[in-house]
Length: 114
Length: 109
Image (cartoon, rainbow over all chains, first blue to last red):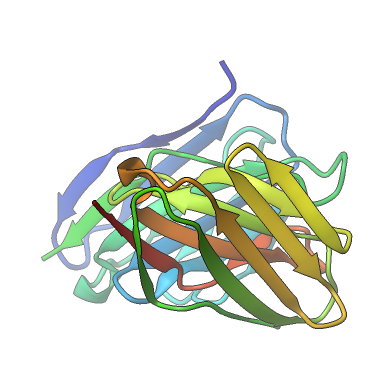
């Protein structure tokens, strides 16, 4: 089954404690991206990657890091989480084959930083 | 960069037709998407337009005018389960979509 898998689904952590949210896709997609979703602000892009070892900042990259060492994985790293990073996070992947094909989303990770 | 604008909230009656508009400004254009999102869930794909005109898919249709930077999503024969947020997204030069803030649609009996 074609899917994007995020882990964990829910996470409560304390300020300053480094964490990683994993994202893996099994569709051999070139493009992957991370979004955060907050009430009234919609989905905002954090980082994106157009292929292995190629990553770029989105609209709200501050406080986040990513890596793309393999095609299937695109982890999101919060080196020192702060309460303003409490949010619902989505990972997505899409293919470049047809240009602009639909993005497939993971189930989301609800992060709370206290 | 990209700027995408859509109404915050709309209400409609079960069985009716509703049109959700989206206007955008973008450098580079590789298509416009509509997604549906129920509260707390991941967005699900509804439609993709890259050429001008109307794309019909069952009860849902999407229209695009590139020269006007304008799209709409048309939902016919509304059902209660259509109550959700509808997200307009534009793929610019990077092919990766940027999303608007979404339109919350409330369908009432």
